[in-house]
Length: 387
Image (cartoon, rainbow, N blue to C red; front, top):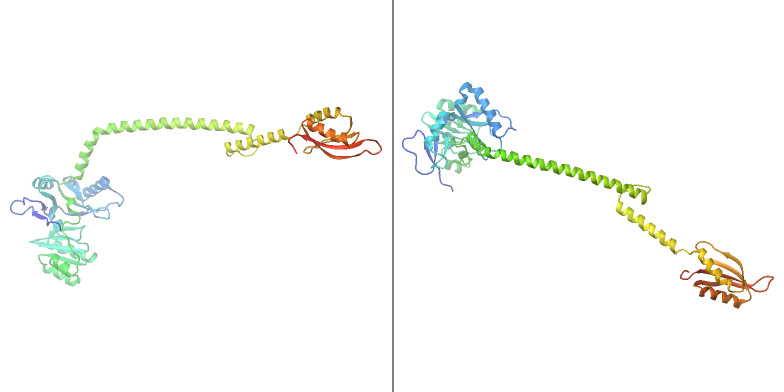
């Protein structure tokens, strides 16, 4: 459990406590103002629009009034209310509270010192004044009659689930709760026992609304602190831009060179390797074309040379007493020699001589010649090493 926070009212007699405390200023001098702000505006732009609306409402005196956004840290929606106060009064509060970081934790309107809970009203009667907290995001301090009027109208538009009347309920407040059938408790403990919402003090981010803090002054200090670095940042950004431009030019030239080389390569491939059809992958298509050409060259080298074979065979036949009848050559088949010899032994001798000359010779057929003496032999001849 955090330690209870000590409060010191500005109009209280005696000095403030020496320990950590919160200074409460009159809520009548720091009321909450409802504003009509676009939901998408953020940051300084939202504050500027709020200040223009403030000047439109109160006229020339708007420049004498300070506006502090009522932006609780846990709020889920952009702020639509602001605490307004006289500039001179805020300066006096700041002087009396001391600088940030001193014993005073924050300067707040007195209605923000009340405990608050969602859906619950917290009401505290202080003589002729009434402090009211209409949930974590709203509140006010007003005279008795005005507070009664405001709460009556609020009850009609947005009734609470419970009312916490600290220090006891005034007759009019008790009657209001009774007629609207709204549970009413006079202490936080009683509300907890009855299962009503538990109101908490300074647990909704109220300390962030310290009236001593001036967001515009903080931004101005930051702007002055950043100003000396502005030109260095501009120079750095300019240098980075020039470097990027140079890199883009170099990249463009490199791409142009690549396109030129690619076009020349495609033209060469088209002229030598791929005369027709699309060029999809130069490396694959050139490799395939080279393989096809090597296979074709090897096949051509493996085919027999009929002229050379005939020359060798003729030299052998000329040394033997034989009469050549026919030489037949068909591509892809052995050469056929038909000759007439003296006898079968001569035919075998011719085959042997052809083999001795480095040819592969086989006697296909040998028979006696019709109507003549001698033997007609048909011999198959191929280079050695081929079938």
